[in-house]
Image (cartoon, rainbow over all chains, first blue to last red; front, side, top):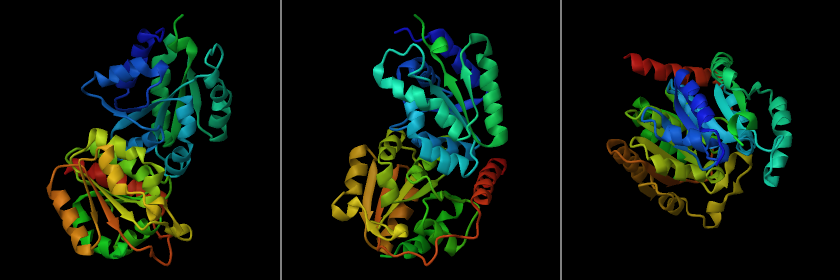
Length: 170
Length: 190
Protein backbone atom coordinates (compact mmCIF):
# COMPACT_ATOMS: atom_id res chain seq x y z
CA UNK A 1 0.00 0.00 0.00
CA UNK A 2 1.70 3.18 -1.12
CA UNK A 3 0.61 5.35 1.77
CA UNK A 4 3.70 7.18 2.89
CA UNK A 5 4.94 5.83 6.19
CA UNK A 6 7.69 8.41 6.35
CA UNK A 7 5.33 11.32 5.93
CA UNK A 8 2.77 9.78 8.28
CA UNK A 9 5.54 9.61 10.87
CA UNK A 10 6.42 13.22 10.16
CA UNK A 11 2.83 14.25 10.83
CA UNK A 12 2.60 12.10 13.93
CA UNK A 13 5.81 13.48 15.40
CA UNK A 14 4.61 17.02 14.73
CA UNK A 15 1.38 16.29 16.60
CA UNK A 16 3.38 14.94 19.51
CA UNK A 17 5.54 18.05 19.55
CA UNK A 18 2.35 20.07 19.93
CA UNK A 19 1.57 18.02 23.04
CA UNK A 20 -1.42 16.31 21.43
CA UNK A 21 -2.32 13.56 23.86
CA UNK A 22 -5.64 12.34 22.44
CA UNK A 23 -6.49 11.40 18.87
CA UNK A 24 -9.91 10.38 17.70
CA UNK A 25 -9.94 8.46 14.47
CA UNK A 26 -11.98 6.58 12.00
CA UNK A 27 -9.56 4.74 9.75
CA UNK A 28 -9.37 5.23 6.04
CA UNK A 29 -6.63 4.24 3.65
CA UNK A 30 -4.50 7.36 3.92
CA UNK A 31 -4.72 7.34 7.71
CA UNK A 32 -3.66 3.74 8.39
CA UNK A 33 -0.12 4.56 9.48
CA UNK A 34 -1.23 7.46 11.63
CA UNK A 35 -3.77 5.26 13.38
CA UNK A 36 -1.19 2.50 13.90
CA UNK A 37 1.41 4.94 15.21
CA UNK A 38 -1.03 6.27 17.76
CA UNK A 39 -2.17 2.77 18.69
CA UNK A 40 1.45 1.78 19.36
CA UNK A 41 2.12 4.87 21.48
CA UNK A 42 1.39 4.22 25.15
CA UNK A 43 1.27 7.96 25.83
CA UNK A 44 -1.46 8.60 23.26
CA UNK A 45 -5.15 8.13 24.00
CA UNK A 46 -6.57 6.75 20.74
CA UNK A 47 -10.34 6.79 20.46
CA UNK A 48 -11.60 4.69 17.58
CA UNK A 49 -14.98 6.06 16.64
CA UNK A 50 -18.06 4.57 15.04
CA UNK A 51 -18.75 7.87 13.29
CA UNK A 52 -16.59 10.95 12.99
CA UNK A 53 -19.04 13.37 14.59
CA UNK A 54 -18.48 11.63 17.92
CA UNK A 55 -14.96 13.00 17.76
CA UNK A 56 -16.25 16.55 18.19
CA UNK A 57 -17.70 15.55 21.57
CA UNK A 58 -14.62 13.56 22.53
CA UNK A 59 -12.34 16.49 21.69
CA UNK A 60 -14.60 18.88 23.60
CA UNK A 61 -14.36 16.61 26.63
CA UNK A 62 -10.59 16.54 26.26
CA UNK A 63 -10.53 20.33 26.00
CA UNK A 64 -12.53 20.63 29.22
CA UNK A 65 -10.04 18.25 30.83
CA UNK A 66 -7.13 20.40 29.67
CA UNK A 67 -5.86 17.80 27.21
CA UNK A 68 -4.89 18.78 23.69
CA UNK A 69 -6.44 16.60 21.02
CA UNK A 70 -6.82 16.21 17.28
CA UNK A 71 -9.28 14.46 14.98
CA UNK A 72 -8.15 12.17 12.17
CA UNK A 73 -10.73 11.70 9.48
CA UNK A 74 -11.49 11.51 5.80
CA UNK A 75 -13.21 14.45 4.14
CA UNK A 76 -16.41 12.38 4.06
CA UNK A 77 -16.06 12.05 7.81
CA UNK A 78 -15.72 15.80 8.03
CA UNK A 79 -18.94 16.11 6.04
CA UNK A 80 -20.58 13.70 8.49
CA UNK A 81 -19.44 15.87 11.43
CA UNK A 82 -20.87 19.19 10.36
CA UNK A 83 -23.69 19.43 12.86
CA UNK A 84 -21.33 18.68 15.71
CA UNK A 85 -18.87 21.26 14.43
CA UNK A 86 -21.55 23.95 14.10
CA UNK A 87 -23.75 23.23 17.09
CA UNK A 88 -20.99 22.32 19.51
CA UNK A 89 -17.53 23.52 18.47
CA UNK A 90 -18.68 26.79 16.94
CA UNK A 91 -21.57 27.41 19.31
CA UNK A 92 -19.47 26.83 22.43
CA UNK A 93 -16.12 28.00 21.07
CA UNK A 94 -14.23 24.74 21.34
CA UNK A 95 -10.81 24.49 19.67
CA UNK A 96 -10.67 21.55 17.26
CA UNK A 97 -7.64 20.51 15.28
CA UNK A 98 -8.98 18.48 12.36
CA UNK A 99 -6.64 16.51 10.10
CA UNK A 100 -8.72 15.67 7.06
CA UNK A 101 -7.56 13.40 4.27
CA UNK A 102 -8.44 15.14 1.06
CA UNK A 103 -9.80 12.33 -1.04
CA UNK A 104 -11.40 12.90 -4.41
CA UNK A 105 -8.99 15.58 -5.52
CA UNK A 106 -6.52 15.56 -8.43
CA UNK A 107 -5.28 12.07 -9.16
CA UNK A 108 -8.13 10.25 -7.44
CA UNK A 109 -8.88 6.86 -9.00
CA UNK A 110 -11.72 5.74 -6.71
CA UNK A 111 -14.95 7.00 -8.26
CA UNK A 112 -16.72 6.93 -4.89
CA UNK A 113 -14.38 9.55 -3.45
CA UNK A 114 -14.82 12.15 -6.15
CA UNK A 115 -17.99 13.93 -5.08
CA UNK A 116 -16.62 14.57 -1.59
CA UNK A 117 -13.49 16.00 -3.14
CA UNK A 118 -15.55 18.54 -5.04
CA UNK A 119 -17.25 19.97 -1.98
CA UNK A 120 -14.61 19.79 0.75
CA UNK A 121 -13.13 23.26 0.36
CA UNK A 122 -16.41 25.02 -0.45
CA UNK A 123 -17.96 23.51 2.69
CA UNK A 124 -14.99 24.51 4.83
CA UNK A 125 -15.32 28.05 3.47
CA UNK A 126 -19.06 28.12 4.02
CA UNK A 127 -18.51 27.12 7.64
CA UNK A 128 -15.86 29.80 8.08
CA UNK A 129 -13.28 27.22 9.11
CA UNK A 130 -9.67 28.29 8.52
CA UNK A 131 -7.96 25.57 6.51
CA UNK A 132 -4.55 24.91 5.08
CA UNK A 133 -3.02 22.09 3.08
CA UNK A 134 -0.28 19.78 4.20
CA UNK A 135 1.33 19.21 0.84
CA UNK A 136 5.08 19.46 1.31
CA UNK A 137 7.43 17.73 3.69
CA UNK A 138 9.30 20.85 4.69
CA UNK A 139 6.21 22.72 5.92
CA UNK A 140 4.34 19.92 7.71
CA UNK A 141 5.75 20.52 11.14
CA UNK A 142 5.34 24.27 11.05
CA UNK A 143 1.78 24.16 9.70
CA UNK A 144 0.63 21.66 12.29
CA UNK A 145 2.07 23.79 15.04
CA UNK A 146 0.53 26.93 13.58
CA UNK A 147 -2.87 25.30 13.10
CA UNK A 148 -2.86 24.08 16.67
CA UNK A 149 -1.85 27.52 17.92
CA UNK A 150 -4.65 29.16 15.94
CA UNK A 151 -7.27 26.64 17.13
CA UNK A 152 -6.26 27.29 20.73
CA UNK A 153 -6.11 31.06 20.50
CA UNK A 154 -9.29 31.47 18.46
CA UNK A 155 -11.23 28.72 20.25
CA UNK A 156 -12.54 27.31 17.00
CA UNK A 157 -12.06 24.45 14.57
CA UNK A 158 -9.07 24.65 12.23
CA UNK A 159 -8.60 22.15 9.43
CA UNK A 160 -5.48 20.73 7.82
CA UNK A 161 -6.04 18.96 4.53
CA UNK A 162 -3.81 15.94 4.07
CA UNK A 163 -3.09 15.91 0.36
CA UNK A 164 -2.20 13.17 -2.09
CA UNK A 165 1.20 14.79 -2.67
CA UNK A 166 2.08 14.19 0.96
CA UNK A 167 0.25 10.97 1.76
CA UNK A 168 0.59 8.84 -1.35
CA UNK A 169 3.76 7.38 -2.91
CA UNK A 170 3.66 5.97 -6.39
CA UNK B 1 -41.90 8.73 37.42
CA UNK B 2 -40.96 12.33 36.73
CA UNK B 3 -37.49 13.26 35.51
CA UNK B 4 -37.46 16.26 37.85
CA UNK B 5 -38.02 13.99 40.86
CA UNK B 6 -35.19 11.74 39.69
CA UNK B 7 -32.85 14.69 39.30
CA UNK B 8 -33.85 15.98 42.73
CA UNK B 9 -33.15 12.55 44.23
CA UNK B 10 -29.55 12.49 42.94
CA UNK B 11 -28.81 16.21 43.04
CA UNK B 12 -26.60 16.00 46.11
CA UNK B 13 -24.68 13.03 44.63
CA UNK B 14 -23.72 15.17 41.65
CA UNK B 15 -21.77 17.63 43.75
CA UNK B 16 -18.36 16.07 43.21
CA UNK B 17 -18.92 14.70 39.70
CA UNK B 18 -18.49 16.24 36.29
CA UNK B 19 -21.97 16.36 34.82
CA UNK B 20 -22.77 16.66 31.11
CA UNK B 21 -26.42 16.92 30.10
CA UNK B 22 -28.31 17.03 26.86
CA UNK B 23 -30.44 19.99 25.83
CA UNK B 24 -34.12 20.53 26.53
CA UNK B 25 -35.94 19.41 29.61
CA UNK B 26 -32.94 17.71 31.23
CA UNK B 27 -30.84 20.88 31.08
CA UNK B 28 -33.68 23.18 32.17
CA UNK B 29 -34.74 20.96 35.06
CA UNK B 30 -31.25 20.34 36.41
CA UNK B 31 -30.55 24.06 36.14
CA UNK B 32 -33.81 24.81 37.99
CA UNK B 33 -32.60 22.75 40.96
CA UNK B 34 -29.56 25.00 41.23
CA UNK B 35 -26.71 25.44 38.81
CA UNK B 36 -23.25 24.34 39.84
CA UNK B 37 -19.94 25.03 38.10
CA UNK B 38 -19.45 21.29 37.52
CA UNK B 39 -22.57 21.09 35.32
CA UNK B 40 -22.25 21.46 31.56
CA UNK B 41 -25.44 21.64 29.52
CA UNK B 42 -24.90 20.75 25.87
CA UNK B 43 -27.68 22.90 24.45
CA UNK B 44 -27.49 21.45 20.95
CA UNK B 45 -25.41 18.87 19.06
CA UNK B 46 -27.88 16.15 19.95
CA UNK B 47 -26.15 12.86 20.58
CA UNK B 48 -22.79 14.24 21.59
CA UNK B 49 -23.29 14.50 25.36
CA UNK B 50 -22.20 10.89 25.76
CA UNK B 51 -19.19 11.45 23.46
CA UNK B 52 -18.22 14.47 25.57
CA UNK B 53 -18.50 12.42 28.74
CA UNK B 54 -16.32 9.76 27.14
CA UNK B 55 -13.64 12.31 26.25
CA UNK B 56 -13.69 13.65 29.80
CA UNK B 57 -13.58 10.20 31.36
CA UNK B 58 -10.68 9.04 29.19
CA UNK B 59 -8.65 12.12 30.05
CA UNK B 60 -9.58 12.16 33.75
CA UNK B 61 -9.91 8.47 34.67
CA UNK B 62 -10.08 9.08 38.42
CA UNK B 63 -12.94 11.55 38.12
CA UNK B 64 -16.57 10.46 38.20
CA UNK B 65 -18.31 11.69 35.04
CA UNK B 66 -22.09 11.61 34.84
CA UNK B 67 -23.76 11.95 31.44
CA UNK B 68 -27.47 12.69 31.55
CA UNK B 69 -28.78 11.62 28.16
CA UNK B 70 -32.23 11.11 26.68
CA UNK B 71 -33.85 8.65 24.31
CA UNK B 72 -34.05 11.14 21.42
CA UNK B 73 -30.42 12.17 21.75
CA UNK B 74 -29.11 8.64 22.22
CA UNK B 75 -31.06 7.40 19.21
CA UNK B 76 -29.23 10.01 17.14
CA UNK B 77 -25.85 8.59 18.15
CA UNK B 78 -26.27 4.91 18.95
CA UNK B 79 -22.69 4.38 17.82
CA UNK B 80 -21.63 6.21 20.95
CA UNK B 81 -22.73 3.18 22.99
CA UNK B 82 -20.30 0.99 21.05
CA UNK B 83 -17.50 3.55 21.43
CA UNK B 84 -18.11 3.93 25.17
CA UNK B 85 -18.26 0.14 25.52
CA UNK B 86 -15.00 -0.20 23.61
CA UNK B 87 -13.10 1.88 26.16
CA UNK B 88 -15.49 1.40 29.12
CA UNK B 89 -14.14 4.08 31.45
CA UNK B 90 -14.64 2.80 34.98
CA UNK B 91 -16.09 5.98 36.39
CA UNK B 92 -18.43 6.98 33.60
CA UNK B 93 -22.10 6.92 34.60
CA UNK B 94 -24.47 7.10 31.65
CA UNK B 95 -28.01 7.98 32.62
CA UNK B 96 -30.68 7.94 29.91
CA UNK B 97 -34.06 9.48 30.66
CA UNK B 98 -36.41 7.67 28.32
CA UNK B 99 -39.72 9.48 27.95
CA UNK B 100 -40.36 7.88 24.55
CA UNK B 101 -40.73 11.36 23.15
CA UNK B 102 -39.06 14.35 21.54
CA UNK B 103 -40.72 16.43 24.20
CA UNK B 104 -39.36 19.90 23.61
CA UNK B 105 -40.53 20.02 20.00
CA UNK B 106 -44.07 19.00 20.82
CA UNK B 107 -43.91 15.48 22.15
CA UNK B 108 -43.45 13.48 19.00
CA UNK B 109 -42.96 9.81 19.88
CA UNK B 110 -39.49 8.29 19.44
CA UNK B 111 -38.79 4.70 18.46
CA UNK B 112 -38.67 3.64 22.11
CA UNK B 113 -42.45 4.20 22.08
CA UNK B 114 -42.80 1.50 19.45
CA UNK B 115 -40.58 -1.10 21.03
CA UNK B 116 -36.95 -0.08 20.56
CA UNK B 117 -35.18 -1.31 23.67
CA UNK B 118 -32.33 0.96 24.72
CA UNK B 119 -31.30 -1.37 27.53
CA UNK B 120 -30.98 -4.19 25.03
CA UNK B 121 -29.06 -2.01 22.58
CA UNK B 122 -26.64 -0.82 25.26
CA UNK B 123 -26.08 -4.37 26.48
CA UNK B 124 -25.54 -5.69 22.98
CA UNK B 125 -23.17 -2.82 22.24
CA UNK B 126 -21.00 -4.16 25.04
CA UNK B 127 -21.75 -1.77 27.91
CA UNK B 128 -20.76 -3.98 30.85
CA UNK B 129 -23.52 -2.91 33.25
CA UNK B 130 -26.97 -1.87 32.10
CA UNK B 131 -30.26 -1.56 33.93
CA UNK B 132 -33.71 -0.08 33.55
CA UNK B 133 -35.45 1.59 36.47
CA UNK B 134 -39.08 2.61 36.86
CA UNK B 135 -39.22 4.36 40.24
CA UNK B 136 -37.43 7.27 41.87
CA UNK B 137 -36.23 5.01 44.68
CA UNK B 138 -34.73 2.45 42.33
CA UNK B 139 -33.23 5.23 40.22
CA UNK B 140 -31.52 6.78 43.22
CA UNK B 141 -30.28 3.38 44.37
CA UNK B 142 -28.95 2.55 40.89
CA UNK B 143 -27.05 5.83 40.63
CA UNK B 144 -25.64 5.50 44.14
CA UNK B 145 -24.52 1.91 43.51
CA UNK B 146 -22.92 2.88 40.24
CA UNK B 147 -21.01 5.74 41.79
CA UNK B 148 -19.61 3.38 44.42
CA UNK B 149 -18.61 0.83 41.81
CA UNK B 150 -16.06 0.87 39.07
CA UNK B 151 -17.74 -0.17 35.86
CA UNK B 152 -19.17 1.74 32.95
CA UNK B 153 -22.92 1.69 33.51
CA UNK B 154 -25.91 2.77 31.49
CA UNK B 155 -29.05 3.40 33.53
CA UNK B 156 -32.25 3.70 31.52
CA UNK B 157 -34.83 5.61 33.56
CA UNK B 158 -38.36 5.41 32.18
CA UNK B 159 -40.01 8.77 32.84
CA UNK B 160 -43.20 10.54 31.89
CA UNK B 161 -43.19 12.87 28.90
CA UNK B 162 -43.58 15.97 31.05
CA UNK B 163 -41.17 18.85 31.16
CA UNK B 164 -40.69 22.38 32.39
CA UNK B 165 -42.70 25.37 31.22
CA UNK B 166 -39.64 26.96 29.61
CA UNK B 167 -36.34 25.66 28.27
CA UNK B 168 -34.18 28.77 28.14
CA UNK B 169 -32.16 29.47 31.26
CA UNK B 170 -30.36 32.64 32.27
CA UNK B 171 -26.98 30.96 31.88
CA UNK B 172 -25.33 31.83 28.60
CA UNK B 173 -23.81 28.93 26.70
CA UNK B 174 -20.32 30.38 26.67
CA UNK B 175 -20.43 31.32 30.34
CA UNK B 176 -21.35 27.72 31.11
CA UNK B 177 -18.54 26.35 28.92
CA UNK B 178 -15.84 28.61 30.35
CA UNK B 179 -16.99 28.08 33.91
CA UNK B 180 -17.09 24.29 33.51
CA UNK B 181 -13.60 24.16 32.05
CA UNK B 182 -12.22 26.46 34.70
CA UNK B 183 -13.83 24.34 37.39
CA UNK B 184 -12.06 21.24 36.02
CA UNK B 185 -8.75 23.06 35.79
CA UNK B 186 -9.13 24.10 39.43
CA UNK B 187 -9.46 20.42 40.46
CA UNK B 188 -5.93 19.73 39.30
CA UNK B 189 -4.58 22.55 41.43
CA UNK B 190 -6.19 21.44 44.68
